[in-house]
Image 1 (cartoon, rainbow, N blue to C red):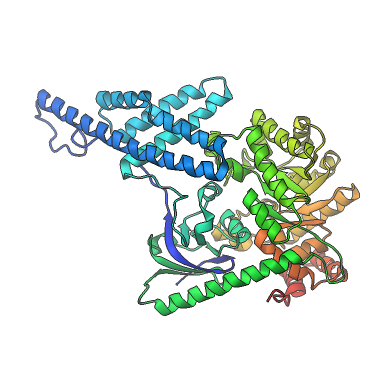
Image 2: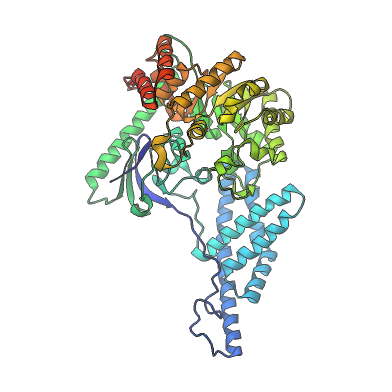
Length: 591
């Protein structure tokens, strides 16, 4: 057994799917070529023999190229079908374009010429040809053609992988009851996974607030993060048991030798699934209110239309955070205004008549877009992300703002939220791009947005505190770094003081305040936020039943008393213990 951080509750048993990068070596000469890996002498070969050897090697590499191309074509043909079924014809057309390029004469002739003239491997010839073509596209003035450069590079990478390994790793093609094991699970990798087949997630890096953990909790998938050396200890294809409550991972279980252990875990997993269904039904039929009848606006953090439906079925009152970047990560190029409007319409329809708050694209840092062509940054968390990214790409900013405006004009209750704001000018740029009347707010997640709040409030209709980033920026602690995880303290006096300041100043200006960070997803920190005067909580989908149960145990007077304790606490532990004491005996009313 190995131990990590319990990040999402529940028990899962399944086959390990180890997600590691498949690196295709560069710069290797083809076998049999002069100076290549199969060369056995350093001199003395006749010119004729060298020429014959080079010709043989070139013919071999051309054959490897053609074999790899057939594999890549088969991969993309299958992908077109799956994307068409899941996302529609327009998205599938992207990959149909990939097929045309793969099967075209230009690619074949260009790669053949490189192999013949330079004696490089098929993998290197493919990448060199695609990179040259990608650069030509990038030099064109049209943004549409500039974006084709990323498609060309992606084709080159997939084709080189097919040549080298004889296959293309497909994150969507995983077996039923898979346990995902990874060094770190990025949002882009997550977007390509078939999460319906995932029974647990284990990562070597990250903590409770890593994106893998947040996603797992929202979908009720057991998750353990920060497991040291897990990739070396969990072989692919082996049975693994994961306990998301204790943070324990049992690797490489033997179906025969560990039969009793396996049976115990499977029984626990089965009981856990039955309990989850009871819990969901209770939550759906139970209003979010305190013991003395005060109603609380409790909504869900989501990223897709499927999650919107799950939020509705668990009794969420709309969404306080739609992570629009997850839609951008599922496609191979910047989606058009029409594509975005279709996606947002599905989400709003699933949650109608409740309000849906769509956050503008928040990529960069730990959420890169492969096709965005961002330059490497020494510190991406302080770099081009959030509204900064969009202000440098005005066409994309306009497309997204207009798509949200279009949904608002159709009568859906939708709001637009701006991430990573530090100045009022950023809000004005977004408002100028809006069409018609749409409510615009900001995420308060930078120290600047707290300190300059009085200058921002006249520009907005609402604010939402992003406690994940706000906490890490105030405390200078990387929330994804397991080595400093103990220093990431949401109850730190500085964090609580910042939240109190935002609430008081916003209310004085008549602006409502929500919280969409992970702090809103745990009973103790959620009641702490309500005690400080927050108007709306937007939590992970799976957290909503626990929050409703906790709310039914506290009164408005309890919250007033807790506020005094929080703001006078000398340290994070004292504040946290005061909040935990209030909800320690909540129980499970759905049982």
